Image 1 (cartoon, chains in turn blue, yellow):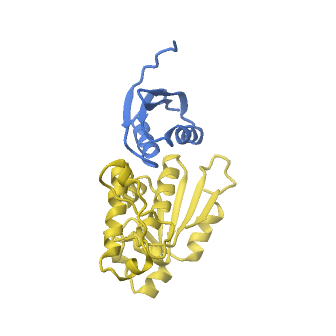
Image 2: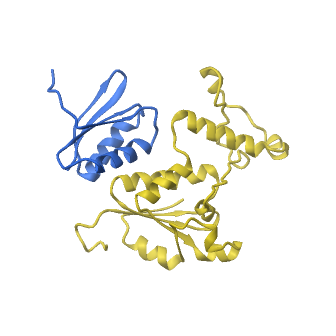
Image 3: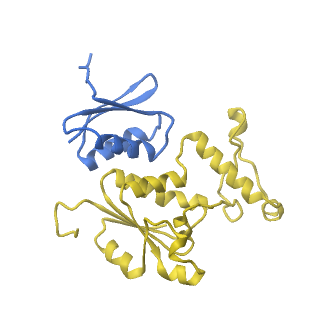
Length: 79
Length: 174
């Protein structure tokens, strides 16, 4: 059992394809304060590698990347 | 900012040279994704790509001359949607309205799959401060005026783009 991460904001990108998940995530992240956590949900099979790349490029840490109910779920902490 | 500054963000410099619907996507997608990754992004719209700076986009796509383009239906059962319809050149070249049918099919399929429209991607690029440069020479050649294009773009020539691209980490001609 992994620790539960408490998010400050949820962004649902279900049904969206590239590049919308990264663009919407970037936009949502701008609304958060440093240290706050965004939970992003996506169904795009390209999202897991793309979100990892987005995290590395922007410096916003990927706390967890997982699959839940057939969807991809990411927890990202604003730098 | 120049490359001599170690804290400068990465930079993407694109040339968008084609104005059809299918070719409007790659620069729009790459530019918006790079801007979302906090890169600096500039696009030089030249030749047919210049029309992508018009306020109302009228980009179309034709399977004629695009032999690898899948012709698929955006509706019906999955098995039907997955059929790749063979389109002989004689049909594509001679049936009036074929291009508008192909354009409608592509737009509907993209919409069904969750792909943003080119207009939406451009709006996102504008919002994320992507630098858009319309080619002055193309304007002169094809008879366009500054007012024909969105106010967010600037007008420049090869030297303007090259100076920007010289400090870019990624440069692509599309």
